[in-house]
Amino acid sequence: MKNFLVFSFVFLGISGFAQDYDVTKAENRLLMKLETLRSASTDQEKVSANEDFKSDLAAVLEYEESFDHPFLSLTSVGFIDSKDKMVRIINWNIEQDDKSQRYYGFVQHYDKRKKSLSVTELKEEVFGLQQPDGVIEAKNWYGALYYQIIPVKKGSRTIYTVLGWDGNTTMSNIKLIDAMYINGHSVKFGSPIFKIGKETKKRVFYEHSEKVTMTLRYEAGRDRIMMDHLSPEAPTMKGYYSFYVPDLSYDAFIFENNKWILKEDVIGVNNHDSKEKRTVHTMDPKTGKLVKIKIENTWQNPSDPNAPAGGNEHVAVTPESQANDEKSTEPKSNEPKVDKRDKRDPSDLSIFGDMKKKKKKRRRRNRKN
Image (cartoon, rainbow, N blue to C red; front, side):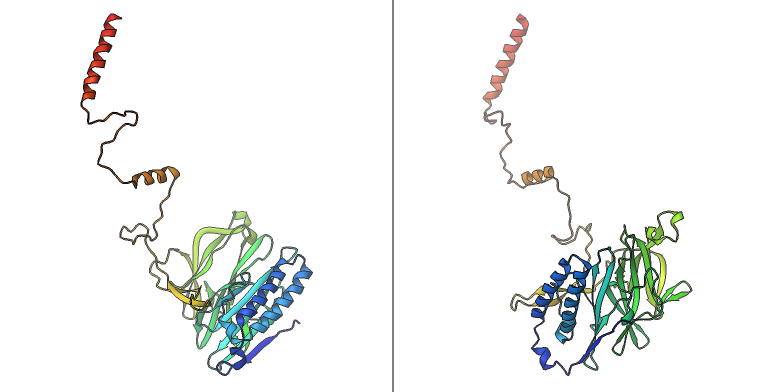
């Protein structure tokens, strides 16, 4: 049985040692250890470097300041925050010499009522090719990279629906949807909230060919989990999921009556009316520190003639059209155009008399011949 570590710390308001802790310096130290890990060339080197990085990260996550610090320099580690600001998942993967993946992670959970921060380590247990079933604890986690958290209510309990990826084998990948919840200081996965037809599942796994990408994302504006529908490349490949690919149709899980209910053959469209704001990190020019700001997602119809200038207007430009555009922008003159081969003044009427004399000479030559 693998060891299971739970780091739990109680803060009365903001504790004294938390106020003095510099997360930015800690991040710089973690970055150096992460770079050592990513540059390791053998499995043995990776194990050693990962243990060093993981133990240091666990110590940093004990501090309250780490809970909303962006850690932007740790680009190969995911820091996924829930919308209710109660949960953060930190996870990363390491590719082995045989191209298999190993996964590591922590879950931070903050309880505002108790003013306590719990940090639970996720310990991967290899399940082989068999997909895990039932309720899973952090000490025997199946391993994955989570990239989105959707909090939903089931009675008085908050269930954190998580979307994830697993690089299953050299022939197939997996996209998954699971239900994570906090029981005291324990983190558990799996809850019967996914309804597919008459069947209810605790989690859903979608295995597909490694050659393709499957879309699986949450659309907040429509409150649904949108996904590609998978089909075998050929009828003879049915049941061999390494040969399943998106078939250009879409399915979706819609949350109704405390369950995610699967709806097949839904229409996937851009969310024009969404007013949801997204959070981005930017540098405060006054303090030089990273701060969070919210910007509104707006959709602009590119065919709208009343759209504001400088909006979503995209025009293909070729070298020829660009040259013509440059000529068209030159200031126009009221002077008549002159053929550059003719240097005479077009306003001089005497040139017409010269033309008549030339015509008479040509006629005389033709008569003599």
